[in-house]
Image (cartoon, rainbow, N blue to C red):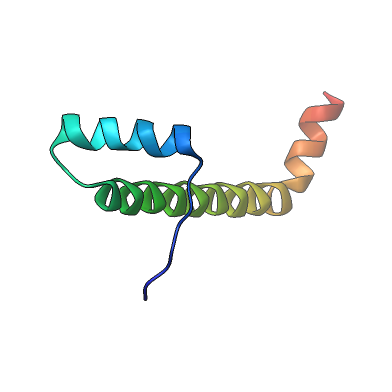
Length: 68
């Protein structure tokens, strides 16, 4: 799917400079950045799910530790 991305001039210039140094395109950098955002979000969800499990599964133990 295609989309148009409008970047602030400063960000576009910075992206252009990075792309030049890395010998790649701005498009490739944006795809990489989007993948990083998705991975970070997914990881956060995994951590939240694990924490919710511990809080529910070990609620009695956590309460006893709190009272100790």
